[in-house]
Image (cartoon, rainbow, N blue to C red; front, side):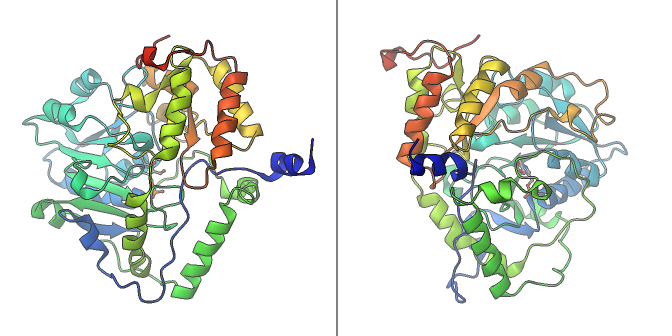
Amino acid sequence: MGTVAALTRIFYRLPPAGEPVIIPGYDTGVTDADAVFAPYSACFYGSATSALAASLVAAVARTDTSTPEVLLPAYGCPALVSAVLFAGARPRLVDLEPDRPWMDLDALRSALGRHTAAVVAVDLFGIPERYAAIREVLADTGVVLIQDSAQALPPPNDSGWAGDYVILSFGRGKPVSLLHGGAVLAQEENLLCALPRPPEAGARRTHGSLVSRARLYNLLSSAWLYWLPAGLPFLGLGQTHYRPLAAIEAADPELMEWLPINLRAHWRRNESHQLAIQAILGDWANACIVDLPQACGWEGANFRLLRYPLLVCDARVRERLFRCCARRGLGASAMYPLTLPRVAGLEQIFAGVSCPQADSFAKRIMTLPVHSRVRPSDIQTMRECFADAGIGTRVVDPKRISSNATF
Ligand SMILES: Cc1ncc(COP(=O)(O)O)c(C=O)c1O
């Protein structure tokens, strides 16, 4: 092995998701971050977890039950549960549709009841939930529909947002990262007014310290240095933990002024890596893989993924594919390894809850990166891993691709 190849094997490691922070000068020119979300108005918080908690506090306040419940997908970020518990509600889980990142609509219908205050629907990986269908299930119930769009950030005029409240995250590894922050968007005045105001921001960071933090993040998330933070256990990168939310946190107002420039850059990014990965998956579409964006109706233009998700037919084959990608530093991720009832700290809350489809999804999901640090040579290496992993038979004629391969 040549020296460059050896160094690449040791040090090259793409992060699984996220773009560098764009650092504006002192005078950003645009200070009204709110305006970029028009026709929505935004209320900023310190994280998406705080933003979700705020919207749930508002949803719970609209009900007249003393035992409010919030319905959530059984596979997802444990922060969803933290926010529900903070709002004083009981989280109830809804299983997924088979081989889809979506809630099972029949299960959602059965879980709805007189105590339901809100449904949280999640645009997992950037794939939109089916809001029209969920609205039909919720018709005339008065239940608040919260769209958790932490992993998706479509342009506001693109009809990508459909919840009564829409939750955004500006944390690490999100579509637009500022390392901190979140927002609730809403259009209706009464929904906006019902949101608890975040507390006054405490000690604010200076512009200089925000810039230093962002520069360090950008440096350490480059493919040649990412091995460093990824190897530090106390950072817990890529790990899934449940942490109770103690208080709704405030956003840093200066950092929120960085939003417009970062949002515009995000909306200008192209989808070339998505298309390239889709082409690889197209070659293997009758094998042991479900191309989730395609199976969910992506036609190449209408949604921007945070990561490219695929479902592999069984856990052992996923392991082989994942190991190959990990060895070659390709930024593959096995995502949340467990469904919410199995996450440490949540077993008691969800004792006896069964979610077979979500369990199966958790064992077989894998994502590939589509961010701007991915190079064409990485896509080529991904192609090699697919060929080596023994996932089945390659499709010779891509026109014969079946998008709903089932196993
Ligand atoms: C769907 C979803 N909602 C909420 C959150 C919480 O985001 P934050 O880290 O900004 O609190 C995450 C975090 O990854 C997420 O993926």
